[in-house]
Structure formats: C-alpha cells, structure tokens
Image 1: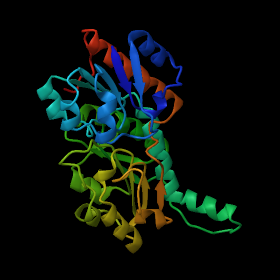
Image 2 (image 1 turned 45 degrees about the vertical axis):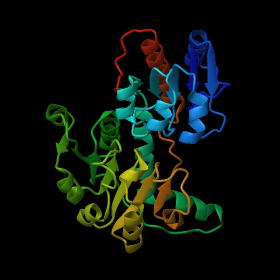
Image 3 (image 1 turned 90 degrees about the vertical axis):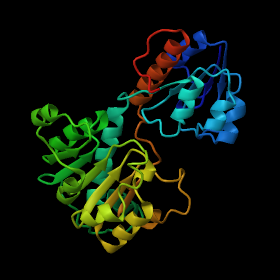
Image 4 (image 1 turned 180 degrees about the vertical axis):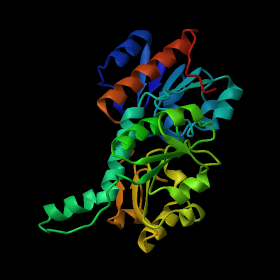
Length: 316
C-alpha cells in the first residue's frame, strides 16, 4: 500500500502515534517535499501509484484525480473540501473524507484572539511600543456588544461560548440552524441581512462555495454598522479583499482580522499596509491539540476506507 501525505505537520520526521500507525499500515509513504500546499503540477507526479492520500490544502483537480487510477481515497486533513473536485472524485469512484470538528476549539480561540486584537489594535500598539513610541490609542470593549456568528457549526458554537464569557450578546445565522440549541445557549438566530445590521463584530465560519464566495463584499459591508469588526478564520475568498480595503480606509469598517486570504501566501495585498488589520498565516488549526486530533482522524479515515471498514466522515 502506497500513501501520499502532504500536510506540513505530518512531514517525514513526525513521530506522533497517528504517524506510527500509518507507517505500520502502509508499505510506502511519500511526503510533501515543499513545506507548502502543492499545485496540481507538483501533486500529480507524487500521487501517481498511490492508493491513499492524506491531503493538506493542495489543489486537487479533475486532471490530478484522472491521472491517478490507483487512488481509492482522499483523506482531507481538515474539515474544508473546497480544494477537492468532489464531482470528479465521485465520478471516478474515489472516496473523499474529512475531519469535521476536531480543530474547532483551536480555530474558535484564534477567532477570539483576532476579535480582541482588532478591538484594541494590539499588533499596531505592540509594534509602536517596541519601536520606542508611547502611543495612546482608544479601543472598544467587547462586553455588552453584539457578535454575529455566520455559520453556527462546531467552530461557531465554540466561539459563541468564548464571546459569552466576555459578556457579549450572541446572534448567529446558518441555513441549518438549530433553534433548540440557540434557545439553550441564548443565541438569537437571525437572517444574514439582519445579522449584518445588528452585529458590532462579525465572525465568519463558512465553507467556500459559489454561494459564499465574496459574501462579504461591498453590498454586505454597506449594511453593517459603522465601525464594525469582521473576522475570517475560514476561507480567504469569502471576503472581497478590495471591498474590505476600501471600507477600512473610509472608516466604515473599524477592524479586520484575517487568518485566510484569497491568495496564500498573500502577494501585494493592500490590507497588509493598514494598522486596523490583524493577520495570521492560516494558523487557526495549528495547536498541539488540534494537530494531534486531525492527524488521528485523517489516518483513521484513510485506514478505514482502504481496509473496507465503516468510516463516519465520508464527504463523497
């Protein structure tokens, strides 16, 4: 059995229990030599001849899948599958799995950190203080303000608990929202438009698809409260970066926290020039606990499918 492993946290030298289990299962393991997500051109020669594939954020196109007739399973290391051509995988009989919820606490805590950092402009103040400048800056308190959580899945629910601890009013929108859960946790369910109008802080926890691409654009921003803070720890293309830049410069948006970008790593991104933008390098799931959980789940999924055993995390 030949397996390709591309997530950087599962590189060749990793000695985690999950990797040891994979080494016992596989006859040969091929690793990502680049230390970053692979392009289709880089991925195809590595994946040929593999029956299993633990996938990071690589671009898994129809051409890649069609060029790998031995491939039986793509086990995504993470919850999002927007980089996988699901329709082609289904047509070719390739099973796609993911690891939903296992990194939820780590991502939610980073989202909370970005909210705090944007509200108090912490990175800009840190830089100024270290540079010898004693800057007076007026931020905003979170207590008593309203957070709007767009996407009340595993991550959104964890973030709601964090925000409740700061005394924030909780609102959320989700096409499959659970009214009973909202009542139990004092979360007010709203339509997307109503949430935009009501929230002081908007946190995005959505998959990337045709409906969510640039869902935070000029029209959505125009509906927001003046000075609203937006945080995105999901996929970069959910936010129209040009529209966000214009709103931040004009003062319509008070702050922006990004753990994901339309192009990663970002190139010539104007948002990087603004003091009211807080950025991290798509690191929401990079905690010791989340990495361990995702490794274990991704390996379990792969072995289950290749061994013909039931797998509860099949996407397609």
